Image (cartoon, rainbow, N blue to C red; front, side):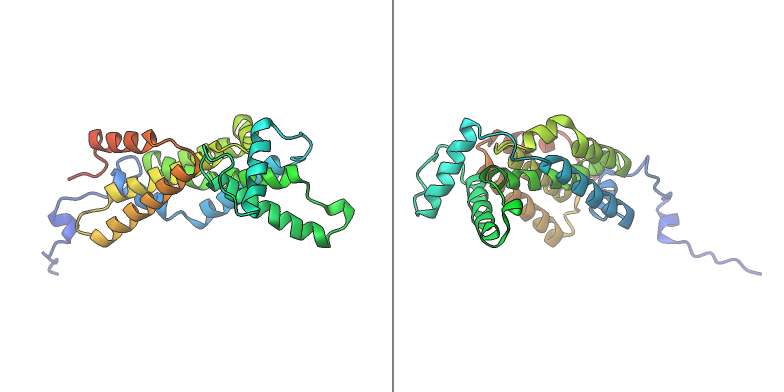
Length: 240
């Protein structure tokens, strides 16, 4: 019997199956962008557990001075005045304003035992974004080092005492980290995407730009944008 002399494109190119250890950065990034169902469920579970740890007894401590400034700014927003605490970006104070309005609506129809205090309402946005940080942290870490390392980093964030402590106070750093990680990840995906796929490349650049914009709206740290550009100038993330 004759054997077919026709070769597959992989055989003609002399290609070999790509293992996780030898995968290119582009291939690793693609796998991180499309996590399996098990990974997605694990991230959801870590986010829920992280939220519980951050939200537990969150109203026990009184306001710090910086939190009082943000509370007064949010109250001024309700009057249409955006000038208080103007030396800091508006995103966190806007989220606090929304949280306060939502808590007021909740308290109007809830019993005395289910009331949400101002301390809890002011800190709730950071609790939510702090718990959700496991997602961009996993994506960025997995794109560089693989899914297993990405899951370990997400686990350490969900249960890390330092992360929990910072996420339980109304400080801009929580939002800064959340949007910064997304900005770094989407920019990495854009660099890993072939120039023959311009629409996908533009999509990732646009997502990175939006994330960087939200990062700047959280805290004025523009040097992170420049450092990211410098890294990708020095380190190629896609094989030619």
